Picture (cartoon, rainbow, N blue to C red):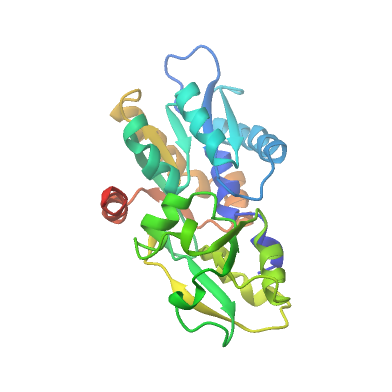
Length: 283
């Protein structure tokens, strides 16, 4: 795996190809909100990729060309504004945004990606080997990572209420995990929080200092497409989900899936998502 994997979340790239809700009665192109808080993908880059890839989805799903459009943001506040102002029928969100906005926008997961045989991942806090033995040793220390844009998600899900990262650590958000890891390697940071794909890519980086995991979260589900259960019909959600599940079997779609490391798109696992909802609601 090349180091650039740390710069571009591969599953998001494929999900950007799948940003097309079923068009049944809409005369104008239907818009999907795509959110990846803290992600390294620029708005222009993402929107350009989505525009090209949507044409593949339209063909696979047998929808007219240019039926769908999408809007992307890597900023959590902007994502919240998009969901509120645009009221999309379908959206791609992070797990944190889904949990936060679930009740307000009646969000229900319909499809999630499977990466390297798994539909879940762990978040890991890594530091230079021998520096810190446990999470408590990092109190007040500098922590960086691309996932720091959602502090409530970190508090309730990643750290399961054990610590409040906003006050427990000195947070230094970044949109490039590789940059944070290089700073860690130089001793400029104390630790870096990585998602599953970023952690898997560590072996490809020429770091001088060996790293070790100081803290690992529980398994968390990978998020994909969600729908507003009040503005979409059950049959539309089902039809849309089935169309996405066929994506990686399509000739052109398969190339995209291979490029971005996605095995397949599968029905959302309610059994894995429900514990996250309970953790989020826990006071």
